[in-house]
Image (tube, rainbow, N blue to C red; front, side, top):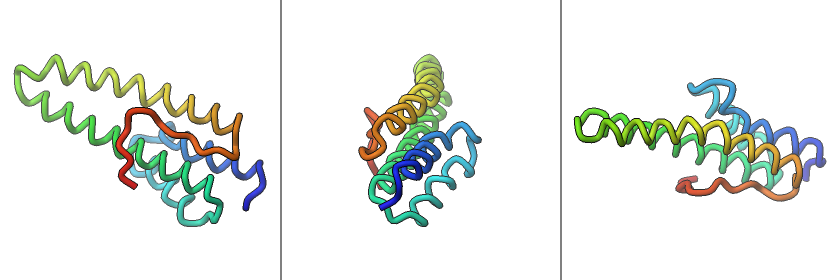
Length: 115
């Protein structure tokens, strides 16, 4: 079991990794933390952050596929706008919740948990 300070730092880093970049760096940080830690709370937060990243990429791809069709263009812009808002607000909320309750993993709403 890690100390509360380490739990806060590593869990917040997992959820906040999306702000570093939109490339593999944002996914790489939770993967590395998932592999190096033994604390179940940090592992759950890393898995949840990875699931959130994967869901964002899948939904963006879905928006891209809809963008190809002329009928789907307005729907694609709605999806991308929602993703832009969610990719900022939900990780900030996750960081605040993790810092407030470090012994409880944060769960993102409305995502598929693949890991």
